[in-house]
Amino acid sequence: MINPLYQSILSKTSKGEKLFAILIDPDAFQLSKTTKFLQQLPKTTTHLFVGGSTVETGKTEATVSEIKKNSSLPILLFPGDVSQITNKADGLLFLSLLSGRNPEYLIEQQVKSVSKLRKSRLEIISTGYILIDGGNISAVERVSKTKPISQKNSQEIIDTAIAGELLGSKMIYLEAGSGAKIPIHPEIISAVKKELKIPLIVGGGIKTEKQKQDAYQAGADLVVMGTVYEK
Image 1: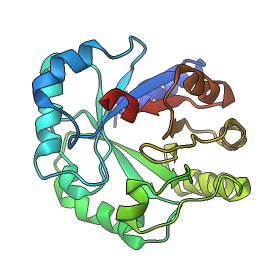
Image 2: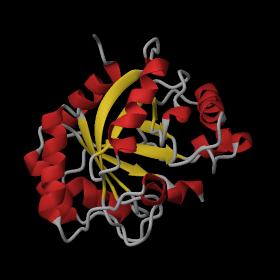
Image 3: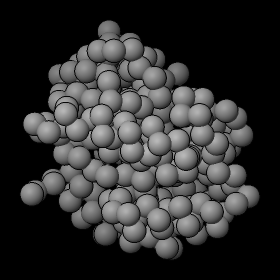
Image 4: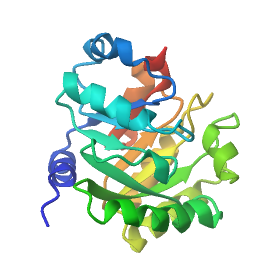
């Protein structure tokens, strides 16, 4: 099976190219301002992620459809639950919340999604999702009813990422949570990256160019920013 989105990510990151995604929360996105929003995105943007911890039914598909009319950037779903899956997108980050122990987000939502994905044309990219304490209670923590891993416990973060790769994840996503006060420390990013053979995504609390560059220099292959662009 050809997986062009993932193969493109692998090809670029293997050459040392850095990727950049804007995360769009459909509940906070104004469809009427789609064109203006897209025009203001940085030229370095390589991907658009669409999704949120909780999204009103139908809003994800409407958001993706409107973006598709105005942009050729690849759109990957970043769903909080099965209701956010839509075939209008290009691909799906098939997330498993490895940092938590709630079976609903480790495997149950994934099983529920199979009936939708069986005949889907979405490119599915298995992604190990690790929630890390960003100094506030994130939407992911509230909805999933799981606790983030403390940034003081770097070994647990590293071991969780390695476990995700060994389980077959094609990417690892370190997430401090939307609107995090504290982005993931560069030392943690660096330590995790040294242990992985797969691409590393980093997001949450990254609000400035310096913070983005710090994440890249530490080893992030793809940086995600969202809240700052919603505003």
